[in-house]
Every structure is written in structure tokens, then in C-alpha cells.
Length: 139
Ligand code: V0V
Image (cartoon, rainbow, N blue to C red; front, side, top):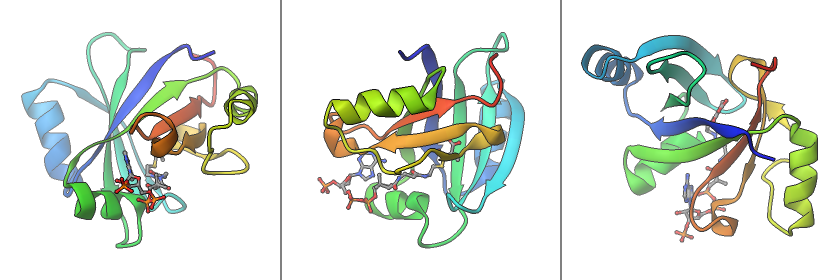
């Protein structure tokens, strides 16, 4: 079962400008920043208030082929994904498959901070790209 909304992902054209806004103006804290070549992104995690809450993930494209570049050219910058935390992603993937929904990857892949991630196709979820995320360590 899903335990919480882990993060909400926003596609941004300029990562530094987006960090400035979320930290400088909104008062968030930059807790992590990472390049993920496989996903074609540079991403930054922003936390608000007490630690352990839902975060905002700022996602900038590394290449024109990146999912984020495609998203921005089709829809413009904005909300791109909703990430749900699960204790065991293999179990969650089995449940999703058993429901007949399309997972994007056969096996979980590496996400932010060595988490394990997969995605459910937005056409199977009512229009929202859903990420499943199993954190590297139980928080
Ligand atoms: C596309 N569509 C979306 C969407 N992206 N709808 C809602 N939210 C999105 N983000 C719609 C689009 O408008 C089309 O609808 C339809 O889906 C097209 O689907 P498609 O042709 O099959 O595929 P593409 O080429 O548009 O790609 C969409 C998918 C792609 C979801 C397959 O973005 C993908 O592989 N995403 C997973 C990887 C990812 O997003 N990585 C970046 C984050 P109409 O026009 O047909 O009605 S990396 C990350 O989150 C990390 C590292 C982390 O959290 O740790």
C-alpha cells in the first residue's frame, strides 16, 4: 500500500532559477541535487517545514530527448508527475500489473538518492503520470 505522497515533480526550464524561487521566495530547503543520466534529468529536492514531509522535485532536462524536454515542449513547464511512496516496489509493481495497468519499466530503475522507481502510464491513471518510489532506506 502507498504510505504517503513522496514528492510532486515539476518540469522546469531552468533549475537554478526554480531553486531560487522555491528556496528564496517560498522558504523551502534544498535537500538534494543530482544528475540522473538514465532519466535524462538534473533534479533538485525541496523540503518544507518539518523534515520527512512531502517534497517538491524540480526536474530540468539534460537532453532534447529527455521526458522532461518532451513534456515542456508539449505542455509547457509545470506539474509533470505525482510520486507515491511504497515500502516495497516489487510488491507494488505486482499489484499494478495485476490490475491491468501499464508500468513503464519491466524492472524498477534507480531514482533520486538511490531510491527504486517505476511509473504507471498517465493514460491508465486518469491523466496523471504516477511514480512509485521505494526510498533507499526506511525513513
Ligand atoms: C505525457 N502525457 C502525460 C505526461 N506525459 N500526461 C500526464 N502527465 C505527463 N507527465 C500524455 C500526453 O499528453 C499524451 O496524451 C500521452 O501521454 C502520450 O503518451 P506517449 O506518446 O506514450 O509518451 P510520451 O512520449 O509523451 O512520454 C510520456 C511518458 C514519458 C510518460 C511515457 O514521459 C516517460 O517515460 N516518463 C517516465 C520517466 C520520466 O518522466 N522521467 C523524468 C523524471 P495525448 O496527447 O495522447 O492525449 S525522473 C524522476 O522522477 C526521478 C529521477 C525521481 O523521481 O527519482
